[in-house]
Image (cartoon, rainbow over all chains, first blue to last red; front, side, top):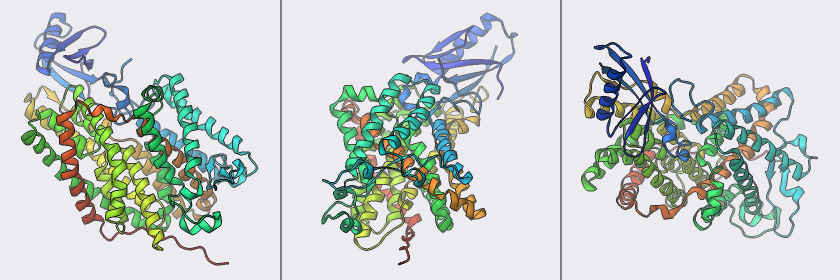
Length: 84
Length: 494
């Protein structure tokens, strides 16, 4: 599945964190996270106002203890469409 | 450093699951060279049965291949160490382990396992009743050489629970799930060899295993989920993750389910800790219990094991112990079942459950995203999630099984020329990986971690004893009743 924006997703114990080299958004749940990301994208004006941006959030498995990876090496990925 | 699964090939060089496939196929590939008359596996050090008071290195530690019979026991052991250390350290490097720590830990585990195997192969422990005369003994436990697995587990548990500093030092190398997945890929060779005589029976076990796993899973999950919600007042995510951990394939299922329902990562970590400890209890208790309760139901017992014991490592380990105990008991009654079928039936159900978790997690993710999160149109679940959660070692197992079977059926003479090498890959090499699994399970199991997991641990125990074990056995009986392993055909006299 193609996306307009690729982000790495992790959890710091309290908040979900979605980031790449250019931006970082945080939220205690996905509603907050998506709202924070929408705000940032609007502020950065990288995408035209009114456009729909498809965002890929790939979970960074290094968030989990490494001993667990031998059992399962995938947590989840999210595809979210954000309307600017 | 980060690990994100984006493309279908992500993880091929960085995860234990894929490295189990590569290691299994490398060793299988070496055994295949025998077709071109190159014995590339005969150096493998094999531990033979010996008698107390008559110990001789040259008779105990023996190269497995006939072409290497002049090789000294220490050279054979040294080559075995170098080859296995080389391939596992290479894998450790690509998986970004601390290679120095892994190397040191691996070396200790390797040396310890061979020492345990030598002790476990003493005739009073290992020799079967029909060979007592040959060894000049009149009593013994008849555990076969594989009885040393039990010894390895005991030693591992002592380290894990009484020498915690030492266990911590070994943890970089103590990877039971990686070791067992590699062992299972090699076990596919054995299944291929035995399937040549009983292909129908092998496929029957696989199909019955798939049906049983599916039915059992459909019963387990909703019952445990309801118990968690109604009786223990767990939150929806906690009940879902715990239900998968208890009902399906333990740690793997907890992570997959937690991911599917977008739970905070702390939840599967907690459930996984619980699963690892309970799986060790199951491994210790169930093989003996099943042998005692139903000594005449080898395949049913194996299948029930696969559905009851969580984690692939503990299941395959329990299946191996069950096979030793049941075959020993049957042999005492004059019944000699072929080796490998009980273990195969325990792995068959487990493999289907492992495969099924990817699909189930996908279904759960759809329910969570479209019903629970209720943001239709904004958030979607990609079908690639199924592939990312698919257990890749199953591909290695199916490949080695079907390749050997195909070779045997289409080119029997070629297969015959390779049989000796296949036996080494599926025998001592697979045995080494299984033995390491037992040792590693013990090392990483710290029973004191149960403290503080009160409510979850109680639900786990009740669900396991009251729901999972009885339903698994009933379902295993329904689908496998009447299936018996082929008997060993006695060698022709003279």
